[in-house]
Each structure stands twice: as C-alpha cells, then as structure tokens.
Length: 299
Ligand code: CP
Image 1 (tube, rainbow, N blue to C red):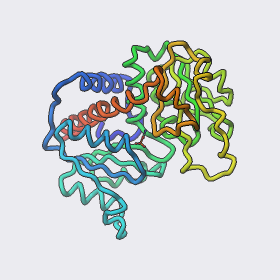
Image 2 (tube, rainbow, N blue to C red; image 1 turned 45 degrees about the vertical axis):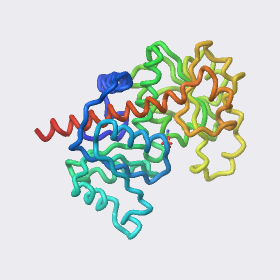
Image 3 (cartoon, rainbow, N blue to C red; image 1 turned 180 degrees about the vertical axis):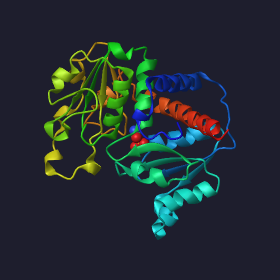
Image 4 (cartoon, rainbow, N blue to C red; image 1 turned 135 degrees about the vertical axis):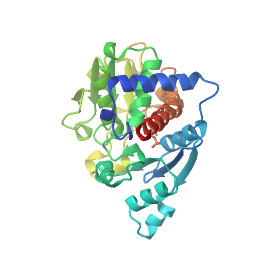
C-alpha cells in the first residue's frame, strides 16, 4: 500500500496487522525512528484530533514533520493544489497527509500526483475518514470484543458523516455481527455499504454492545429541515436500552447536549478519550506501514 485513501484499500489481514501494531506502540516505551522521512500535513478543513495526532505520530517516529496552512500558502496566490504537492515533493517530502471538503478529491488528483509521493486521506468530504475507522475498530478490539459477536448501533447524522461511511466499510471487512445506523429520516441515506438503516433509534439501541454517536454536522447542513432534530441525543435513559456492558464511542468533536448528553460523554461507559489516545498509535502504525511499503517498492 503506497497510499491510504479509503478503508476498502485494506484487507482484513492488513487491518488486523495495523491494529496489532498500534496496540504494540501503545505498550512500548521506545519506538523505531525514521529520520530520513519527511511528512507534510495539509488540512483544508478544520481539525484538532486528526491533525495533532498525525503530528504527534510523526514526531514519535522521528520523522521530519511539516505543516502547510492552505490559507497562508501560495495556493492563496493561485497555485494549483497539484503544483503545491509537486513542490513539497521536490523539497524531499515523501508523505502528504491531507484533509479536504470534496468527497472525490483523491480520485481527482491521484493520477497526477508524483508517483513516489504517498497520500493519506485525513478526511474527505462526506465520504471517507479511513484512519478514524481504523482507530475506532482498534478501540473495539482493545475492549476484548470479537467483531462477529457484537451489535453496534451508530446514532446521529449518518448522511453527512464520512466517519459513518468508513466505519460501515471496516465493519463489513471485519465481519461485525450486527450494525445498525439510526437517525431521523432527514439524516438517513437510502443505504450504507454495510449495516441496516432505520429511524427507530430505540430498536437500534436495544442490546447494543457499542453505541457510536455522530456529530451533528452543522457546517454541511443547508436545509431548515435539518434543525431541531435533537430527539436522537444519547442520554443515560437511552443508553439503558443497550447491553449493560455497553461502551460509548464518539469520533469527536462532540456537541454536548445535542447528539450526546454530558452524563454519557463523561460517564463510565465512555471510551471517547481512549479513541483520541488510540488515534496517535494508529496513525503511527499507518505511517510506518506506508514508509515500509514505499521502501519495498523502491528497493
Ligand atoms: N474525528 C475527527 O476527525 O476530529 P477532528 O475534526 O478534530 O480531526
């Protein structure tokens, strides 16, 4: 794998290797270092978790790490994105971590990106967020749960969520027993790559082992029907429908009191900050995997 652009780029065996490596990194006191590797982070959309955890992952692995703020770069003077990527590659950058608002941005640019520059999708439009799906599945596996034996309920704004789409794909690859996406009709796509879709949140939550809540994507909502639909907020009462051993995930950032109540977000069943922690280790595993794959391809 030279790039990581979507979860479907990965086989089940590759996902298991990445999760095992990330869990190894989490236990380790020291890490291998790759000081000859330069990585640039280019975020065209806002980010806290993904951006900073990639930066930390790069530093933990001893890489040279650069940040390009598109608002302050030469793109503001009209330079094309592909010229920017070719320019940083000419400086010696081997990996670009990129977030962008367009669903198909990587499909568009990939044919013209320098062949020895690896790309990592740090979130594209409403379509894909592969490293988030990997860290979410890592968190589930770390809890000691076997994907084939569990029910997962994903509740919230499924329609606008790149996290939901990548999570659906990773659940398919990993053979999750039961996956249900629950949202008001206005937030429900007709179907997902894997899992049922329903507006019946109570039946979705029933006996769930994992409840993942999704952020209400205010910035992508253009229709007044999207307002005032907070009946799908996960409260302690709603969580009582799930398994007594339920664990709660949220990719972040959270809108407290909208899709998740603070008592749940901060409660004993919440794994939300563990997801953030795991994000650093999973991104180290992804970076190392790409570094080794590129080295093997050039040998
Ligand atoms: N989960 C996630 O992508 O968060 P950020 O937008 O803060 O990176």
